[in-house]
Image 1: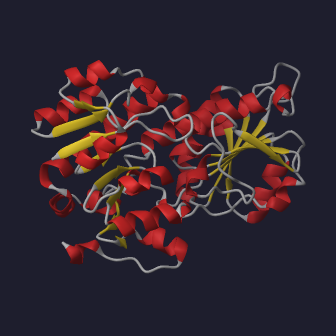
Image 2: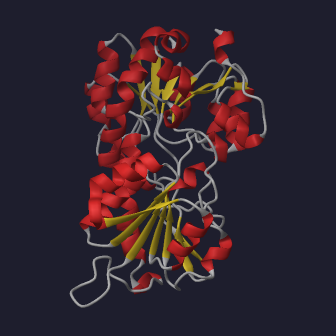
Length: 370
């Protein structure tokens, strides 16, 4: 198979879909790999490293898109990349279609086989291609939240850990999944006063066992969330329903009751955000304020640490990408249900139920199309 990798063009996105080691693995398996010049520079990988690994270096993104049978990216294609789509192209990347109907329609119109990292689910219910970025985003959410609590950014001027004789910052984490757990690890490690809210009692019991008396766990209700965020200095929103629009747990009305200069970091922004006032921001203009509350809603948070993020992500995606390249998408889906779960668009249809549910559309079962 002819496999491509282009430079990401999203604002301040420095990750790349393949490392030189990945290229070597595909080439050793008998595939041809085409890489856009300087695609990996932002993550610290030179063009020469890709060449030595066996990649064919092309000068422009269009050349790579045109020659590729499978394109491996990090972020969803932007509108200026839609003209590069071609029928039967396998696009292996984060798609987040529930928050991006124009992209879904463009993929369907072009007949692209869209395989989304974020919906690939193993038999045990785990999301192995979302997990590494969730770990990074969860830890970054505390780091970024701490920064924007500083007075010079308009924050309350609160140190997360406090010091002897002063109160610790109160952190509320909405969602106890991968992102929430990793946010909790960092927040507890920094000595903050942490409350984590989830509607899964088993998950809350696990977190209680993991962190013990260092955190407070709460069952998710509107009343519990409202009371908790009213007292919070920092709120981390990290609720996930794979492929589906995030539920709006943070109501706009809550903001007026929150402390002036408090901060919300909405990690769920890629899926539409879990705060009613969320809108996507970029690394070069990451925050905005509503009712005195600072919102940090960067849509590609792990892009801030691209070297770590690229290596973590590609370690996870490589085995699945090789299965698709070796067997073709259809046979790979027959042999591995996890890959089947990642197919979001196929032959002009949207095939992911959680995505179509977000838009009130019927989902098409691709098994009948093979």
